[in-house]
Amino acid sequence: MAILRVAQMGHPVLRLVAEPVDPAAIPQDDFQGFLDDMLETMAEYEGAGLAAPQVYTSLRVVCLTLDPEKGPEFLINPEIEVLSDLVTKTPEGCLSVHGMRGVVERPAHIRVVALDRYGNPKGYELKGFPAVVVQHECDHLDGVLYVDRVDPLTLAFLDEFQRFGSLDQYLDDYEAPEAIADEVIELEFVADDDESEQPEAADGAEEEAVSVTDEGEDGPSSVDDAASDDADVKAPTTEAT
Ligand code: NI
Image (tube, rainbow, N blue to C red; front, side, top):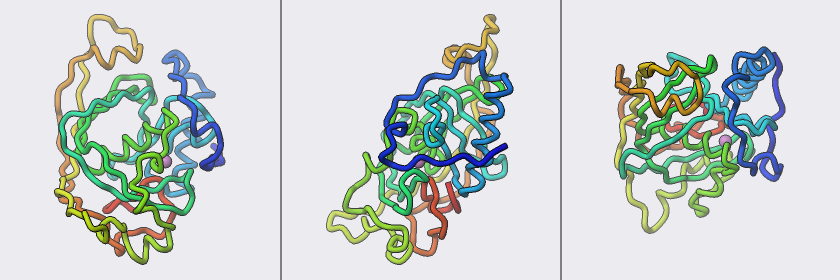
C-alpha cells in the first residue's frame, strides 16, 4: 500500500478522457494493488471520493463513499443516467483544486452502473448528495473539474468559505433549493445466460431495487457544517468527500 500524490489543476492528466478498464485486468495483483493505494490515498487526504486520474492514472476508476456505514467502494467503468429533472446546488471542493469551494448545480436523481473491484456488475439509484458525489467523481473520468461547472460568483477560498458559507445565498437571484433527502438504492443484478463479465453486462442485467437508505434532509450547507479539511466534494452533512 502506498499514499499516492494527487495531481493539481493544471496538470494535463486531469483533462484527459480516461480509458476504460479491461475487465480481465481487474483481478490482477497490480490492479488490485492500485485500488488499495487509492483507498489509502483517499483516507490520508480525508476525501469522500477519488478518481484514478487524480493520482496520475488515466483509467475509468473512482473510489467513493455512498454509505458511511458501508465505507468506501469502487466504481469501475461507471455509466450515469439522469432519472428526473430534480436538481440540487451543492458547495463542492476537490483534492485536485486545493483550498477552494464553489457551488455547482447538478441533477439530483441518477442511476449509476459499474463494475465493483471484483469485476461484478453493481449499480445504484441515487438522490441528493450521493448523486452529487458520483457525478463529481465521474466527471474526472472525462477530464472535467467542478470549476468547469461552478457558479463563478460562488468560488471561495476555504478559509472564507468556512467564515461566510456558500455565497449563493447573498446573490440577488438566490432561491432556497428544494430539500432533497439523500437516498441510496442498491440495484440487484441478475446474471443473464451469458456469464461474461464485460462492462456491457451491467446494462444487460436485470435490475431490482433491494434496499433504501434514507439519510434524511440535506439542506444547503452552512458555515458550521464546513469541515476544516480540504475535501474532494464539500458535503453539507459529510465531513469529507
Ligand atoms: Ni475532485
